[in-house]
Length: 134
Image 1 (cartoon, one colour):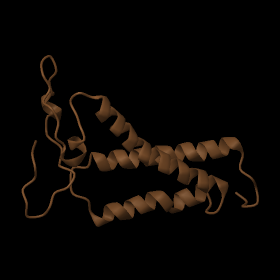
Image 2 (cartoon, one colour):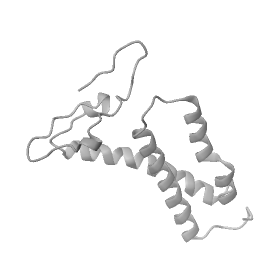
Image 3 (spheres, helix red, strand yellow):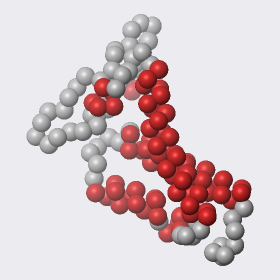
């Protein structure tokens, strides 16, 4: 795309929506990870944000790249805001869930199926200290 060409509204909406989708997915992936954060995770994240494919679609300095960045921000933090709202309205969760995964045990007739009953890793594990289990 020529940098002097103005992006249409639909192009800006599309770039923003694509950024929101990527941001939402990046937050989702990090939330459900099974291992501790590694340096290569940061490299992958930076690659997603400003990789060659993204810069080919949305050249730096254009309105499309700006819309992608705004969408990325809205998607990433929108996921977090969505979690805050769901935790706030749920009687089974409170702010402790964000800290270390604590929650109330479900009461009948609710149950946790065996295939997903494995507790997730706590958000922060300090090396040399035992993990906190709810």
